[in-house]
Length: 220
Image 1: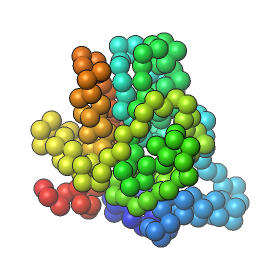
Image 2: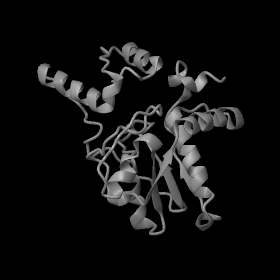
Image 3: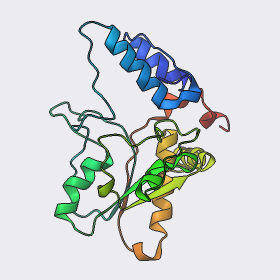
Image 4: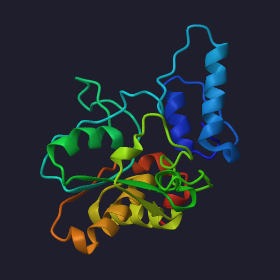
């Protein structure tokens, strides 16, 4: 993983028995992926789940009451462990849109690395540095289907931090930086005149405890 990730993320992996290999922060997620592929080629009987390529990384949601969705996130497992589930915006859209045609998927990405917006506009991708860990890998993953996305909201680093802090102090939700970005994006979407009276859903899968050593807690 990039050397810019929080100390907590590194320690959790080490506690689980992993050997943590850090890559230069300037290379971003692409550098970490390249290193992982190198280690995979060099390691007998190795396996990688291919977070950004695996088509199974989607999340069926079936609540037809939902209106718009401000979404970010990474693949994972069902919290009860009974079935594999998929929790990225592609899976959400593929399941909900056929059931509710008015449903809209809205992506959230760093303002300084808005590659989804660029890709949807058929522009060259120009990724940039940002501090919203867990969001904005700087490229379009193979398992992200752009045709599912109806809009993309760009969030500045400082706003992601500010809204994550607000969630903790005002709502008692200790969330991570990227969850703060999703919250602020949802607030902007909810304030659009055409969304008056609609239900806006923002998914927040990141826990604040993973970012104790980051700037998220500097103002606490």
